[in-house]
Length: 115
Length: 107
Image (cartoon, rainbow over all chains, first blue to last red; front, side, top):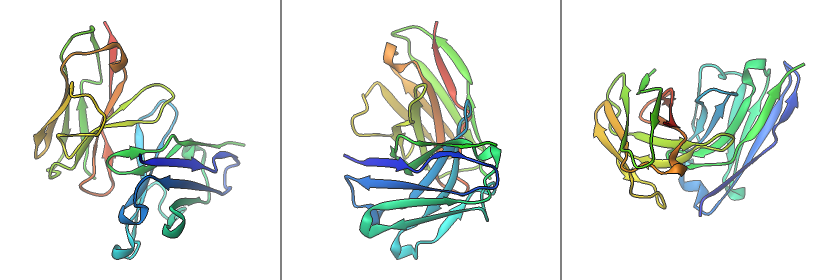
């Protein structure tokens, strides 16, 4: 069974930083592209970032709203996915999900950006 | 960006009803279309991917169809546990994008 468990969310001030982690199990993590998707309170999901596999040189894609501020990375030997979030804004407040598109979502971790 | 237009945005239905939700992409997406169900306070749950492939463990009352840019999610006989919000997502091009959601409520 695919399991994706996020951690690292919390309350941070505007301009601050936070690093999210996702522990994957139940599948061969290194064989899959991985995504971060967020959902602001009362809104629909918004894709944030993608990282490809080793054979694709771990290349990345970002939503325009986070490009230059967020960095997605992975550690295949530890079955882990990360999202480094810098220069956080109030509009980054959301539940952040680790996703194996198109079929598996974690339970999410809440990030609140507020003074 | 590929825009995903989902309709209706909400609907009222009764247990046993057949429900159809549509999703239109602003351009062809090669059937890279997924459907999700989300209940309040919970993570989205995958129902269908590749437009019509049922996710393992999802009951067969859910079905997906369509091609090109027009897609449909059908629930053949609505049950109490099916009242939720449904989203479509295209994963053909960047940025990956979602429909605005359809809230299925009790009539």
